Image (tube, rainbow, N blue to C red; front, side, top):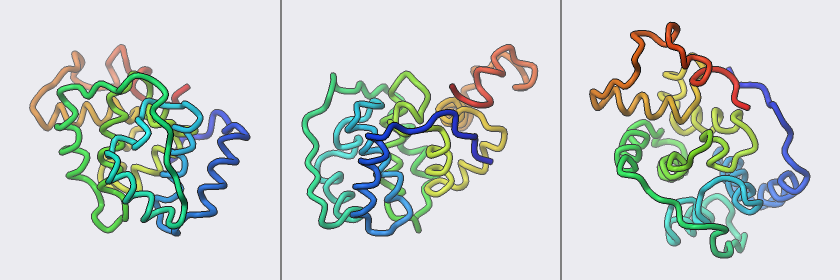
Length: 191
């Protein structure tokens, strides 16, 4: 179940998203990529201008999802994002769950892993307008991961917890989430 929207996108974001969607190819990921680009353009999130894909892969992504649109982002707004040691592990973990039938799912793997390097909620680090879009993005591109998060755990915490458990690293002090003092920090709506 998708979390309710707790705020509305700005008129500038809505206008940019609508402009991008007028050039969309009609694939399911078009809308999410338009949200990512709109967020980056407005200075939201931590993603670099190429969304973490590199220049040539970003150009291919744009050609597939927004053919005929000339989009050359200006240099990044701030300092380069630091890729922490777990980055490659996250790419492999998330990528192992990518739906090969969805155009752009492999690119979303890198985008998500890159945004995980930020320090805010994942939807905010991605520059998305709300957690709702992130949940939809994951359900489309990584349906197995979407189904596994059946208790509405915050996405970045969920991805790291799953990655750690698969590596045999258990960091929770409590034997079950329900009895943990941090339960409210991990589950439920984000603000």
